[in-house]
Length: 573
Image 1 (tube, rainbow, N blue to C red):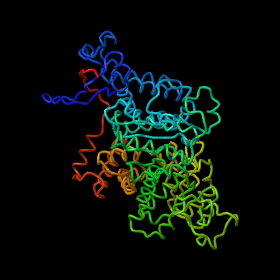
Image 2 (image 1 turned 180 degrees about the horizontal axis):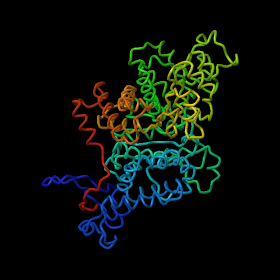
Image 3 (image 1 turned 135 degrees about the vertical axis):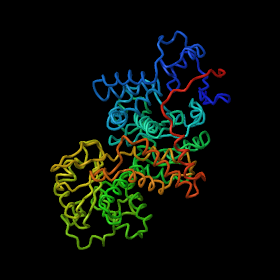
Image 4 (image 1 turned 180 degrees about the vertical axis):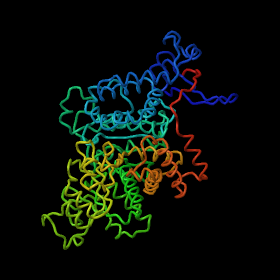
C-alpha cells in the first residue's frame, strides 16, 4: 500500500503530501511522522487530536532536542542505536540532524561503528528496515517489492552480507551496511529517502558463530553457492526490473569472487555499479591525480604500486588505467605504470592462482629479469618499490606496519614527493599512520588514509591528511546516473567523477598537502560528481540530451533538503 503522494496545489502552487494514513498509523510511519511538528490543523484533519503534547515545534527545535540527546550517550554504539531509533521514528528529523552534523556523526552512522553494530545486529535490532529476500520467498519477489510502501524506488543498495567491511561473513546481520549507505545517499546527494531501499539477499551464512547463536535472525544454513546462487540473484534482478524498471542497483560488500562476476554480468543489462570496486578506485585515483597537481606533472609520470589486489586494488587499477587511456597512453605503457602486489608478491602473468580480473594487470616474468631480489623465489613489495623506482604506494592489505620506515625511505629516494595512500580500515589495520608516512619520508610524503588521522606537524609546518572515503564518489554517481536517466554506469563516468574531485581542491589546500576536498563540502562534491556523470551520459549517448545549464538545474532540483512539507488528507486506501 502506498502511504502518500507528492502533490502541487494547482491554484496556489503549494507543495504538499497527500497522506493516506491516520492517527497512530501515521505516527508509526517513520517517513511521514513529523512528531511535535504536526500543526493544529493537521492534527485535526489526520486523526491526531489528543495523541501529541500541546506544543508545536519547529524543525530547528526538534534538531536541538535530538542533538542534546545524542551527545549524552556514553559511547558510539549507543549513539548509533539512538540515531537508528530516530531514523525509525522520524526520518526527516534524522536526516536534518545528520546533514547538519555530518563530520561528527559519519564515524557513527558508517565506519567504524556500523561494523560493530553489524556484528551485534540480531541482538540489538528494534525494527527492521528495507527488504529481506531469501531462497524461501524469492518466488514471491513481485509481492515483496510491491509491499514497499513508497511511491517509487529509484535506488537499491544490495548486499548478501558475505564480506562486510573487514569483518567477513555476517549473513543477514550485514543489512546494517545498506541501511548506512542509504543514509549517506540522502545526506550527501540529497536523494529523497522515499526513493531509496536497502536490500539484504539472505542466502545463508558460513559463520559458525551466527549459526550457533539462538538470537540470529537470518537463514540458518550454509550459503548458496554456484549455480543455485546465480539463479537466485537472477530472479531478484529480473524482479527489480519488472517492478522498478528505472532503479539503480549498487552492489555492496559481496565476496571478491562474486562481486566481479555480478558486476560484469549485470553492468550492461541493469543500471548498476559496485562501490567496493569502482567507487573505491575512483576515490583513490582522485587522490593520485591531486598529488600530480601538486607535483606539476601528469599521472603518466607516476609509477604506482598497488598492494592488496582484491576488489579495491583492482578497482584502483581500473581507474588509473582509464585515466591513462583517456590521456592517450597505449596499453603497454599503461602496464608499466601500474604494479600490483598481492599475498604472493608481485602479480605475475604465469601465476596459476590469478583471478580473471587480475590478469590484465599482471606483469610478464621478463619484466623482472635482472632485478635484485631479497628472496629469489618471490618478488616482494620492497623489491618492486626499489626496482621500478616507484613514486606512489596504495595499500589495501589491512596489514598494520606494512609501509615501514625502510619501504617509505626507499619510496622517498625515488621521487621528491612520494605519494602514500594507506587506505585500509580501521586505524589499527592501516599500513602506516599519517605521522609515520611524513616522518619516514622526512616530510616529503603526500598522504591520504582510509581511516581518519589528525593533521601532522612537521618541522614547523602543518601537513594535511585526506581521508580517502567513498562518500566522495558513490552518492554523486547514483544521483547523476538517475537524473540523466542513463542506461548504464560506465568507467568513463568514474573517470570524470575523479577529475571533478580534484578540481574542487583549491591551490591553498594543495599547498598544505590536501588531496581531496574537505568533507564539509560533501553536498557540493556530490553535485559536482553528479553533474559530470550526467554530462558523460549525455555525451556518450546513454542519457538525456540536455544543455549544460539544464543539467545543472536538474541536479540541483533533485537534491532534497530535509525539510517538512504540509500534509493534506487523501482518500483512505
